[in-house]
Image (cartoon, rainbow, N blue to C red):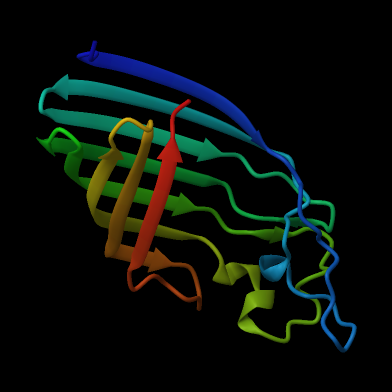
Length: 182
């Protein structure tokens, strides 16, 4: 049975699983943005609304990550994403879609000055962090019959980007995903 409407709420926690004290070959501390982990415990909240007009499905999604100060004193900016997602079933096992993705990333904070003093690169200046971005994303999904599996290809193309200070922005992003339902 396919639902015509559904609301999903989610709570989560990003845990500090990666190292935060990696050093270069010369012994200097590698910047927080290049460390394998953040050292922080970050609460996550998600809400999704789905409406089925079969064979078309439309979803609205909000995802918020409230970042906290990590073990090394660095705090990445909070993140909020808002998505409008469409999928159209063109065949029993194939969906195509178009997503509109909005991303807000707040500015980082180096509470202890461990990564920003002395400033030796643009990455050391936390005013060069944070952005607002809007992406358009065509999608193709293929279900793998009889397996519970599916594959997805997505191309994200920026329509708007406003980055704080000097930082790299996205030209495009290609995403491939495999998933299985058990």
